[in-house]
Image 1 (tube, rainbow, N blue to C red):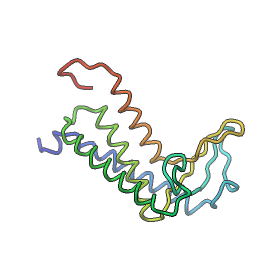
Image 2: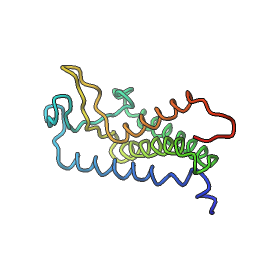
Image 3: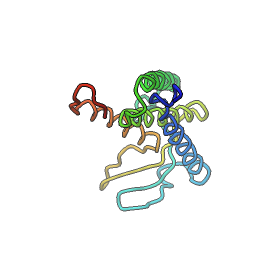
Image 4: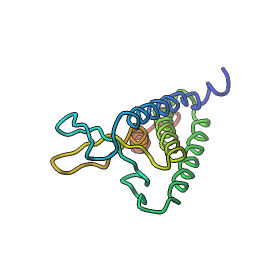
Amino acid sequence: MSALKATGLRWLWLAALIFVADIAIKSVVMDNMEYGWANRIEVLPFFNLLYVHNYGAAFSFLGDQSGWQRWLFTGIAFAVCAMLMVWMKRLPHSDKWNNIAYALIIGGAIGNVFDRIVHGFVVDYLDFYWGTYHWPAFNLADTAIVIGAGMVILDGFISKKPGTEA
């Protein structure tokens, strides 16, 4: 068995899949929807599709800054992805839970980094709401990052016996 297949890096196909799907969906949104909240498409009583730009990070954190945050968030994403890939290399490929979690985070992070580098902003298109309260708009990359991070957190609470794998 090759060194790649023996490690968690074998799961990077999932990161690539998330990246490609994220970029494809964002491309469809940008090409087929008009920008702005006023142009949203009502899908369900609690969900809209729309096309908006996020110049910041989660919840538009630092989105109102002059542009330096674009490079800060890009650098952080690359550093986190590198760290997660090192961890994946140290994990056996059979540790599915952690490798899937890391791959989801990497795929989502690279999807949003692509947007930041190419467009200068992240494309968001999912709008969930309750009554008049709207959750901040997000995208597939954000979803993958949150699911992956949730898996990492959940794994920290799971008691494992020495010598066992998830």
